[in-house]
Image 1 (cartoon, rainbow over the protein chains, first blue to last red):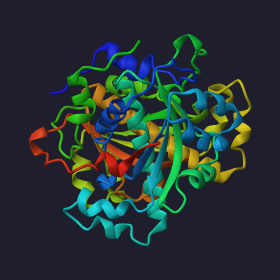
Image 2: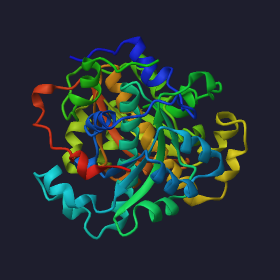
Image 3: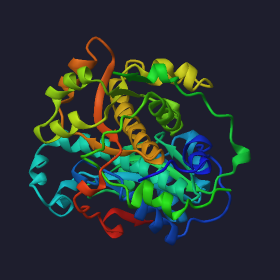
Image 4: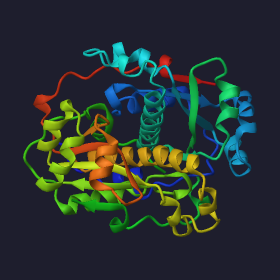
Length: 196
Length: 196
């Protein structure tokens, strides 16, 4: 039977975790990227559809391709981050369903149904982006997620001629806590929740 | 500086965590629901917009309201679960931005921009649904997320005349591991990831 995680783990995952804009100069190596995927991939998605795709942008050349898409307020910090993940999704994700969800014909739920494809990608791809952030924090990394960028520009630079599309971005590295601002407030339980 | 969490914690959050259809008969009490929100609320959202809203469906009366919306394959297990969360979002979430993100006029980014409202709700509300699942696992609970239900029926039953809309559902409780099927496969790194 599972127990509540330690107070230190709850702090690291949620209570003391923050969105970082500044990171120290340690790189995020290939082994860490693989370890990250080997955790996040287990997070649940609808019919195990796993529509998210991840581009780990680390080289100066790839960062330069990303730069024109970034909003002014996100550009410098993203270029300086050790690694930026493009959380994307594959609009043909359902072609993997015979492998991922083999006991029924789940592929036919999506073929030709563009609304279901788009909603499944955005809902489940975003879930997987959240799993990536929590997996990163579990590995001692810090995150700086962003949707302040132009998706079409990213898609043209990285995904032209493919079925992958960008969702949002996450800077990753080892954050500089001394450069954080105070945390913004959260909604009280009574505003965000109902027990019925 | 953060460390990698213990192997037991990584198992509980990701590697051994599963989607459960069957739970034991322990209830999920109010204190646990509040503890869950007090973790998940800290997860990052775009401009701290926090669009998700959560209805914790626990009473027989509320479960009965939910029942007609459920797909055949999800109905019995959901009615039997100790608690079902409607992960919803508030289409007027941006009215909270002067409090949640006070240093700029973020509210004006959304007023009258229905496409931005819908995308922000689905992306960030889904992120928050994932935070809920990882927070639940952190507290020793198990999850059974679903999108196999009719959103319009849930919205009519629970949200008529309000600006809340359903996104997906999560059964919560203490899972019966002996009733699990073997886990489905996940995509290999090379299919889902690129290092650029």
